[in-house]
Length: 179
Image 1 (tube, rainbow, N blue to C red):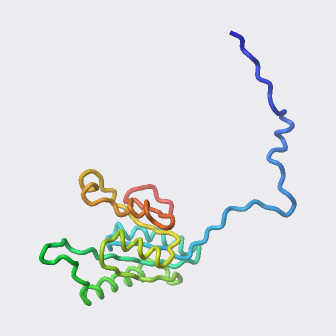
Image 2: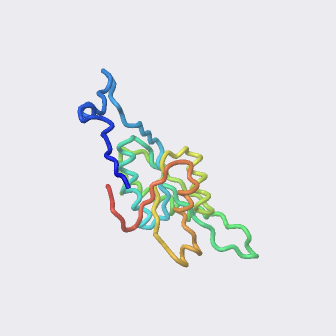
Image 3: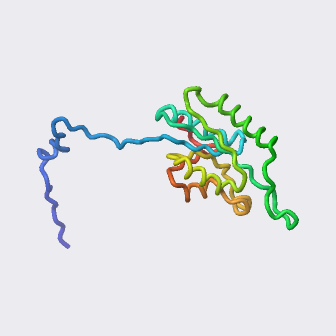
């Protein structure tokens, strides 16, 4: 069997000028990212509020508005009560006050914040709000359930990631943090 010696395709002199210099007055630039609306769904647990650690710096950097969304899921359906009962005025007021409190405690005063409370299934309402406000980025958390609990409950974060009309940043409970 014969072995062949490979000849270099280019000389080292040709590689010395690679890459070619840019044209005068032209500087390559990174793509422009514009964020105007950041959606942060929360179930009001401390874990779900971890997403604000990411949403606040993004909103500050891009001058974006944060929309805090809480969805009150209906209780189990029964034959006697086939439709979910509406939110009571007191229940709505308590949730809205909690969202305003979270906003005041965890979001810089210079950042615009909207608070939204919906009643229904979390995934459907998150997608509806994301489309309604033309969300540029959804920042959500995942509890990281596995096995039977995941099979029974599903993963709202997973469904959001699959169906969202925009990019999604999923924050895990115990992961490397970059903020």
